[in-house]
Amino acid sequence: MTGGGGSHRSGTRVFSGGVWEERYGYARAVVAGPWVIVSGCTATVGGEVQHVGDAYRQSLTAFGVALDAIEKAGLSRHDVVRVRYFVVDDEHYDEVGRAHAELFGEVRPTCTGVRVAGLIDPRMLVEAEVEAYRE
Image (cartoon, rainbow, N blue to C red; front, top):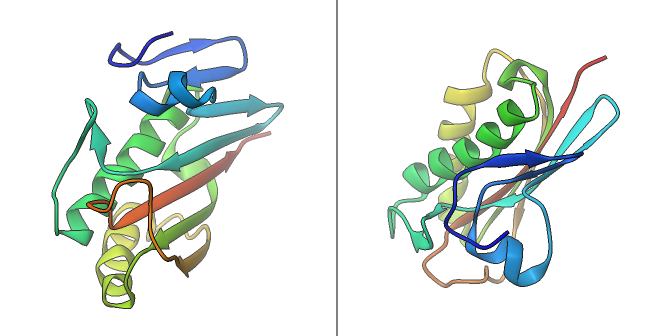
């Protein structure tokens, strides 16, 4: 699949059409039994980084990309059991945490936040991985 198309599911793989999926050879998410494991998601939509300089809005977008993949695999945000997010600056933790609380506050998945030196594009402030589980 080439980038830019709509989301679809192929076997146990979910693709979003993101620019790097085809280029770097990975799926947006993999369905493995009762698990849906989502690759790192950023605020990149249609090949463009959204909300440059705004960690809160980038977080909502990145979590939204992940949740879209989970829904395409047949689960929902209520099935999310783990979130990991990576931020490029300590000052962004509260904004990412606020977005996380808005989307997952009633679900209460496990969560890890890590500060990193940088992401693939310097305009990206946050990247998120999400895992969901349903028996």
